[in-house]
Image (cartoon, rainbow, N blue to C red):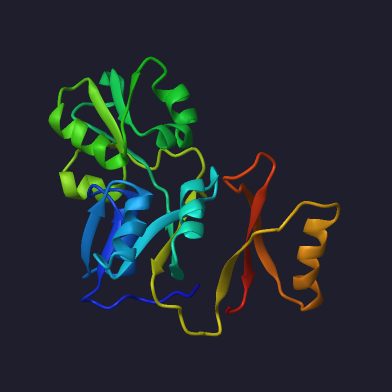
Length: 250
């Protein structure tokens, strides 16, 4: 992986609708690129694979909730490369057309709720939770249900796009919460000197010491591993594949 800005003419596929953290990552990567908003992580891969977009941006890992399993699965299935990464701070804001004491219902995406649960317990213990499909959906919901008793948890970008009144900012429970996004495309990136590579290892069978031996190949060559994770192979029960990140170019 490398940190590189995309060209202004690029068309980027990313999760929509407008106002998601994926949208925010796309703007950070290339502010002037044309954006193609799709519904699912697989749709991003499909758009790039079919050349509807020159590249795509998908969430790979959150510092609190861990790896996005769907992204790993589709990285294994599609013949695409990771060309860059973008780390986006996760900053949640409570918006609405009243104040904190008047809030009765909150529109919030499930993972967002988990990341703000302590705030809800302390400040909004009696509010009803209305789950949505995305942070952008939460923004749309509050824009359409603008009564004083309604509120939503959205990103700072969504506040700007939907012109929503802020009740309280940075309500996330952990100030160090970030999401790592990756840029996927058909081209293999060139070395930059500050690279990281992701590989998938599919063992032919299971045996004692298998993982130890696999990691030994990297250790003998002084290759620094930055992450290792196992995922079900989608085959027989108990069969796994290993996703490994290491410093250096492929």
